[in-house]
Image 1 (cartoon, helix red, strand yellow):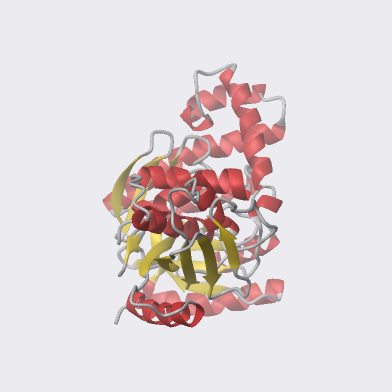
Image 2: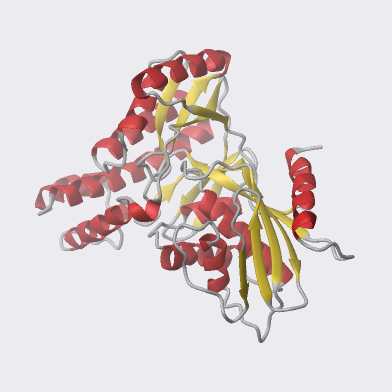
Length: 392
């Protein structure tokens, strides 16, 4: 039995221990997390990104009720959400159900045309580490309710809906990358995604003698209470400066050459550095997609390392623990590249490592990181999976 089958067995037991048994079985859905190879913070600046869906993710068992109640429970939390359609509350402080609740608000559920639902969530995806656990629970909720309530929304409409839920309800000014990757991912492929025009190309991931490993700093962050939204505002200010000198709609529209000709005109050094990261990272994503297509692993590694340096120095989204983990990884055997993956300010890194030296790499990296920080890093292999689906 595969991991989905095992998870469904556990989820079924959780569902029936929570809700009354009836002749109507729940429908079961799965939405993955995601890892990003290149292109951090480009999706709200009109750029290209290069994510892929993971094998890990969020499972949802859901069944319609005969009344108008909405009940949500999760295997990972003690708190249960209950409300009535037509009277769904606003955001609650730091509760897990803000993400699916935001989706329900965007679906405009009301008691006149919908029945209630009972929902049981479970996840094998670490939360708060930069693997898009928020997009995963948003998407699995939207996809499931779209199916069972017969809303007939397209996959792209669901991605945009989930982004609005996170922007307007949760309060994180994220772009569209996470939700899009969680929906459109394909096994063993990266998504070369134009976030401005909402079009993508699937690129096979063949790394030869190398593999991707996720390293978790074991530090957590809440994006709405970090500098994430501050970066968004800095980019809006940088764009206004660029539009006075260049014919661009978004920061990523500028070529590196055009940007270098005008960058001394920025009145604010922070805005200049943020824009520089976006412009040059956009170029790295294009080159990275080409390197993947051609199987040029060392070229991809160089782009990943340059990406991290820019995220650290220009976008300033690193922290002591991330730098300690990156340094430990690059000093360990078999590591070609190591970079921040996710929004930053803690969380995880993506590492390109020789398969034959993976065990030695993990042992030495863990030891170096613990010595530098006193924290034990976590390791996750990258299984590139497919997007959201109904699994029963």
